[in-house]
Length: 247
Image (cartoon, rainbow, N blue to C red; front, side, top):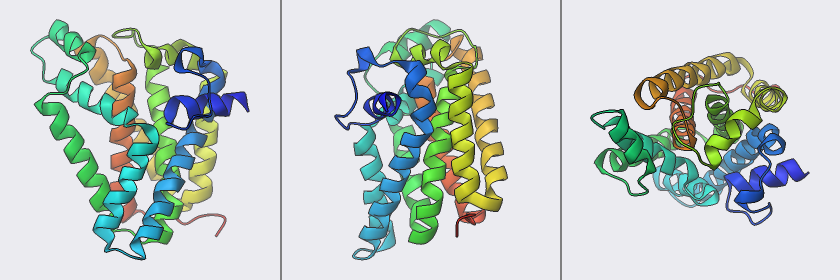
């Protein structure tokens, strides 16, 4: 259970794990998709409850906000930093922007677009579909974030997120991917293949872009990958809805 507590402590605001400086990435990595699935389930449950009293769009916006609050906007921060850095004139400027904790125009626009797309896409789904889909969406998106820092690219800069790279390789990453696939197949059914292919394609493309623009990946890039995969998969759920094997 120490690995689950570590993953919860790193990926959420729940006061259950060790301090961030004491987290063992190798222990936490296999539980990253588990925590993702739990966050997705919380968002779906919030949507189901709120949709009983509110129109779908405000219910979906509040439900997405529950996920943001639960994770402390960890991945959103990475998306904003990465978006700002992609607008840099050269690599040195990009790395400077990645180190800057403030957000610029590109970062703010990326956050607005991500939130708006996720909320409106969720609002188009029934709550039963959301309960089946969101645990998969969040499990796959967080597994993609771990995979991109474990893929062997040189790290753009040090940091806790980047520190997961070497520690996550090998067995921890294999376990994390295995858990994510089990969740995806079990809850997604026939939609599982297209979701996994999409997550893989986004992860590979983001790794290539980060290596070319920044010289490698770091925790901010991992956060951006999580957001891109999460947003893409919830959009795809509108067209390819899950057919749970356990239904």
